[in-house]
Length: 368
Image (cartoon, rainbow, N blue to C red; front, top):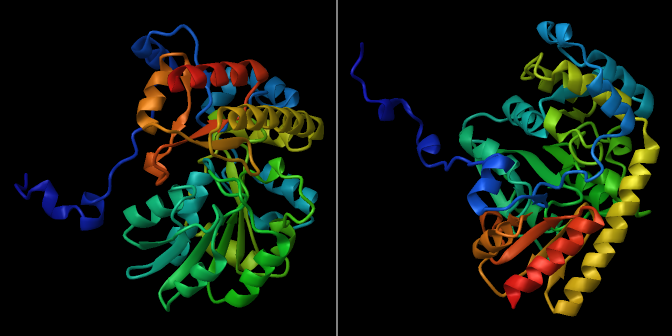
């Protein structure tokens, strides 16, 4: 056996990369903090859960099916989305959550010396995947809590391959309207890949919000991300997808790991995609409870950032990690934001009224 030290074969960009450490399971957290309940207000999950039709699919999953591999390319889902959006089935690729499709795109277009561009305060996985793959992630500061299109364009050089735009942005809820996105794509002129991540698009009901799926017909360098984790309540089943022109998806497909989306996820998503009633019920709940939070937090006198999506950001007059611990001791699990470059801010997922009332009561308690 070789005595070559492990450190000698590890790339420098891996040595310098800090791993993401997930939270402990809920039962372990409840024991740790000595609480008998836990309101999960940290991961932007749908408080209503999956649509009823998807719940039925999950309930009647037959154990013998667990021994069989799923459809390797999410065949029925691709055909369903093609019908829904008026595109070709081969314009869609599925992955084990949006995290995997991010990796597909970066692996497809980046090589040593290349870079990607995104915001400094957005969904961190674009940056993470690029960095631990050995590529530079150029992070452009937000402007008024939103992506700065002009500053992003200024950072482009001959080694820039992909620009990632989260629309609406997680965690700030700001979005580019149709005119701004079109202008950005026109300025890029097809020289780089532009990814528009629409993980929270189903929560937006503004007339000027762009339909990136439609724009992909006009811009062959545009790649669109969507997920079933948020609006459709299937976060635990891990299923997301990308869409784009036939040419660009054919390239990305070469990096796609088949069989990574399980059978239950595919069948539940297939049932969920047409449940418009569930989308409307979720929207009504989110809009009503966001308004409740907005009024209560304004009365307390706290600065908030409340845009689109199913979450709200709150600036606290105390350390956000300390606030996390104090709220956890009351069974309230929020997202502390120092790790997302928003020190002393927290992000709260909008949930049912009982949870929102409990959060406001708990917040007042720790602030007093």
